[in-house]
Image 1 (cartoon, rainbow, N blue to C red):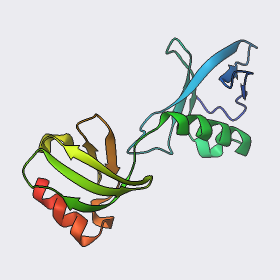
Image 2 (spheres, rainbow, N blue to C red; image 1 turned 90 degrees about the horizontal axis):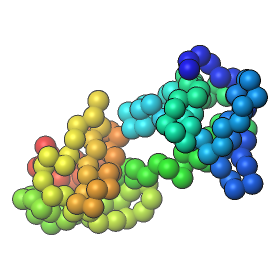
Image 3 (cartoon, rainbow, N blue to C red; image 1 turned 180 degrees about the vertical axis):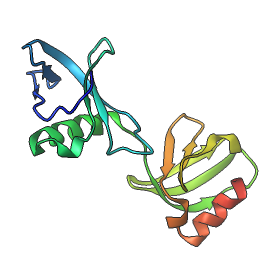
Image 4 (cartoon, rainbow, N blue to C red; image 1 turned 30 degrees about the horizontal axis):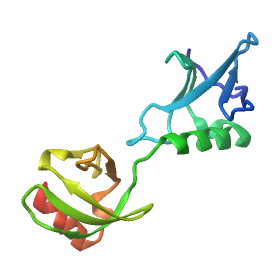
Length: 158
């Protein structure tokens, strides 16, 4: 289904699940918002998807929705999205892999283990996606925005 969904009817049921009510009055309980491009363009389009995985509504510009709906969608997306953003690389145990990295993220300090250089993936622009040995993905939105020491560590692996 495509088109702008400004008149979107979205609520929560007594279990806290999102409920989408279609124009024909049909209620879809337990729907989930899914970002089209969660890493490279998180503020652009998203779909409301049924429990069966069927796209019910496409929202081209979530920012155009009324405040109440934006808040509801952002709350739901926050419970599903877990991609910490690295803001600083403080220390790297070794320039050979596997190596242990001490980093600061938007969610606090942590340690990650990089298995191999292939676990650092370039994104569009100056972005990187780094997967640690546990499968957690860390985002560097813009390498150029990092401090000089962090960029030097990264240069050794790229």
